[in-house]
Amino acid sequence: MRRSTAIAVSCSALFLAAPASAQTVEDLQRQILELKAQVEALRAERNAELAAARSGAAVAPAAPQTAVASAPATQAPATPAPTTQAPAAQSSSPQLATADPSREKPKNGDHWYDRLKLRGYTQMRYNAFIDGDDTAPSGRSRLRSVHDSSINENGGFSLRRARLILQGDLSDHVSLYFQSDFASAVNAQSNGERREHYVQLRDAYADVFLTGDHTLKVRLGQSKVPFGWENLQSSSNRLTLDRSDAINSAVPSERDLGVVLFYTPTRVQRIWDRLVKAKQKTFGNYGAFALAAYNGQGVNRTEQNKGLATYAMATWPFELDGLGGAFRGQVLEVGGTAMLNKIRPELRTGGVSDADFTDNHFGVHAILYPQPFGLQAEWTKGRGPQYNDALRAIRVTDASGGYVQAMYDVGDVGLGRLMPYGRWQHYRGGWKASTNSPRLETDEIEVGVEWQIFDALELTLAYANMKRREADERRSGRAEGNLIRTQVQWNY
Image 1 (cartoon, rainbow, N blue to C red):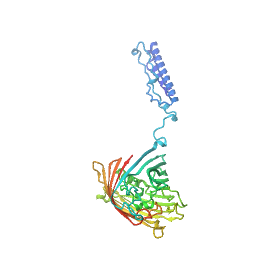
Image 2: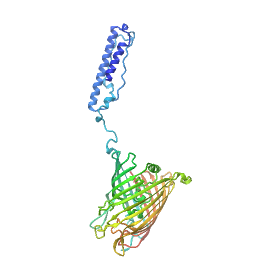
Image 3: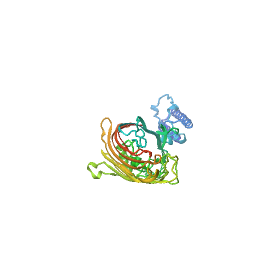
């Protein structure tokens, strides 16, 4: 239709450009030849566009066509030569280029696999004893940590974590998170020898967003349990080398299989986004409020009873700008967590307990983000399974403890960003992740500094004074020692 209109306009221009009385036979002949040339060019263009549409090839937008106005007879050349334009010089119509959307090539992000990204981090450690009980007679505790197996008499380098993470949005309403660890260890069945660097599943979950602004979501699969602020914080983002014994004792390895409902108001998300932009060590978005139900037996362990562990968490950041002075720009976050559970611990004699043990814990937390000075503290209290030395059996016993941590953000000193810290921790209670749920008695002071050399490379140096009971019910008493601890982390 557009080309028909163009031809009609051209014809009108040819015959109405001058009065009929001024036209000669030569003028009319010249105008007819020019009109024929235009018709042939438009016909060739039309054929080229149809061929391109059938093959699915992209065609450049069409150049605007202009009507040809005839000049007065006195200005016309005596012997006009009709000129035709080659089809290749003609551009196709935009309407034809998009007439069949199914033939268009997909754009970035049209497929779910275009929205996924791969990232991760690796931590390499070296621990050196200054002095202490790295060895001990049979039946007495050696200086060991439930968080770092390389603290032993042999020492050496170790890979604490080697994580690979696949994540992204499958659609506007569903996202994926999958994390594996290539630095896990297993024990040989024949002699109990420890074997390093096996792959273990850490996270495998989907988030289903129930609202358009993503403030309300359901998490399905194996994920971190919403108990304890430090437990939820990624090890790649945590300042201290290890989590505290007390907070981690409620959920060793921090994960389980279940369902969580998270709610994060927009105003809370705005504060957290600002903190992340300022490179603060947040705990990640695990909701300002969370309700959850998990198996309760622990990460990568088969459920042993019909009951489910239930959890509730609330945390809220407060901007302290209204206080003025040194508090300008700072944020104080406070909250609490609770869990109710029944668990069947692993036994030294093999298998798991036939009886359920109460495993209930409650905790509180407070974090003043370092801008530049910061404080962080958590405390937990509850009852859980613990081996009783006198009865030689597992019983439900009180468990309590926590930590207090101070840190200072020095900022970029020209060779990277420095953040010194100091932490004191205390715990008395069972450790259900180990066979027979042995009792832990931990008192520890750690002083160190994290040096973020580049975004992709971090170095942590720390001194630790430890007093610990080994996580083995066959050994009694506490071991003591002083260590220099180092960790290099590279992010990718």
